Image: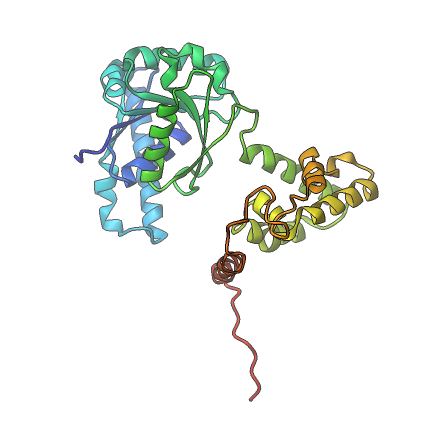
Amino acid sequence: MSGRERIACLGAGRMGRGIAAVFAYAGHPVAIVDLKARPAEDFARLSAEALGEVRSTLVMLAELGLFDGAAVDQLAARVSVVPEAEAGAALSGAAVIFEGVPEVLDMKREALAKASRLAGPEPIIASTTSTILVDDLADAVEHPERFLNAHWLNPAYLVPLVELSPGKATDPAVTARLRALLEAVGKVPVTCAPSPGYIVPRIQALAMNEAARMVAEGVATAEELDKAIKYGFGFRFAVLGLLEFIDWGGGDILYYASHYLAKALDDQRHAPAEIIERNMADGRIGLKTGKGFLDYENLDIDAYRRERLKAFAAMLDQYGLRRPPVLDD
């Protein structure tokens, strides 16, 4: 077994299995810990199911061309499923414990309290909850300075992003350690304040509901809307972040477009955000003025534009849309 840090996944559900596959792929020994006391036959069934899913995930990743399938056995062997009676040893030996029990506040608090007691004060503990704020869970954890939320996006074994949300009691050094670990296994962590919906779920809820409304209003079919999202919205934002895109085109464009939409659709949900109004008044409209949401004053703007346009061109290859020019005979 490698000398890499041990990881524990609290709960043998889908999220725990996905995270186990990520860390096993990256060389870490992983224990999926079942905190529920259950008959031996039931545990054996759960263990076989969890290990089978981890293995099938690794097989699929190999089939997708990420690695040679001959290594599946070696990677899968890094994952074990631990019964409740052996949870203490598994948890106390882990560097990081990812809690992934069902999204029920009392269940999570109970599991976190038990796990933190069994683990002792050293392991970092991170809840993967997508709905419960870190400070609503932290007081269930012994030594809450080592606790934070780490929201993975499904499928955890493919999506790079992990949203980290430290609480009032979280030691900044703990957040930094977890960021470094996630980066080391190929993830892209971002840190956000404890706020409902984190970053991605909050933004995507607005976008998904707006798309659904447009179908209901007869603006376009579901098929046409999704094509627009894949080849327009998604294409651009795979290269430029939302705020970078505002700066790229100009905050003034968003300002005027938002006022128009709010009036034309008679709906203030399309009105410009207060910060857009402030930036407009202050002349912070992006590349044109050297400052927007980001600072461009000391940037080689031409080189920056070329770099981003090169990334757009590469996206054409990913979509299978690159075409040679039509030349005269």
